[in-house]
Length: 236
Ligand SMILES: C[S@@+](CC[C@H](N)C(=O)[O-])C[C@H]1O[C@@H](n2cnc3c(N)ncnc32)[C@H](O)[C@@H]1O
Image (cartoon, rainbow, N blue to C red):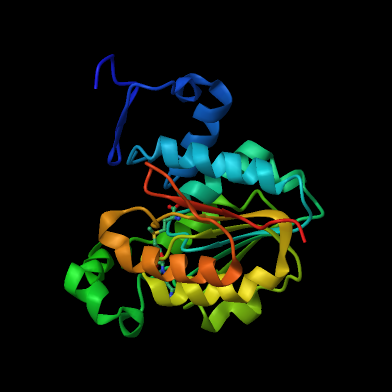
């Protein structure tokens, strides 16, 4: 790589234009997403992933439907896009935030994912107060609904018939595929599915599962150097 790194974090180093990092609107949105309390913020430097989520949200705003995230934890990505879009003023849309708020259900982790060590995430996700953080973070958004419990069991609580933005970030294949299948018929043409884990090497199970699903749906998945994947629902 020649030239000065513009970004070097989160498994991604690039000399390419990353000027959004200095855009005050981005800085504000990202800081809002990243904070865990009004005074505390532990930045894990996922700015490029957050920037991609903003693109997906902007795309989704062009079509009708709600925003859904399955796998919210403290709401970094959801908080970033909520601030960026001024989501509280979008009175015709709801943002649904689904998570156990207590880690990955052990019985959903398959043998291959367990062999890779993905159950180890639970040391990080359990007991961190994610639910309270999300309740506090999104309190000012009247159109954000928090759904607590395991996906897919909780999907019926997400009372929507039209989705524009679906973010899947649950670290394992089973609940993500179930959620993708559940929401696909409701996804507006032009709506976006953002897969946070698709291109991470440790998450190869999710990549394989989504590649199969994408074949069935006859859509391409765009794998990104951020580790994410993007699917856009084609026009009918
Ligand atoms: C990587 S974190 C999500 C990070 C989040 N997207 C953000 O922007 O900060 C993964 C989350 O998925 C949740 N999760 C994993 N499996 C789940 C399931 N079956 N149902 C609900 N939540 C689940 C975990 O509790 C954890 O909070």
